[in-house]
Length: 151
Image (tube, rainbow, N blue to C red; front, top):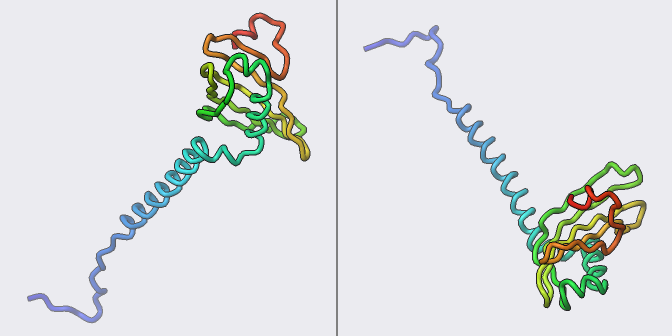
């Protein structure tokens, strides 16, 4: 039997601090990533209904005779494919949308740029692409350069 001397340091305690620190960090990261993913999924499937800029774009499309010719009546939003912000305009920022729409005549894709300045939102470009692949410039002008038409 071993004897214990009072002057000897006590035996080291078993620690698992590194393990619990790593597990805690991984759990926190998973929670943050899951929260971001969950909010993004909610926004792209249901949250867009509360986006005033997007509702302005949809109201403009529904009131455009060319859009009604392409998509038909009862134009609805199926999906928000892309939603981006650009802060490089110098006078505010631009919000860009790529939307999947449907109507009584068929489906289409809408690309819209909204310029946001001081207390205003102005649609500067809106391009509707019908099921046949033809582009219709609802707001903004078609570029003169034939190479830009393919973009």
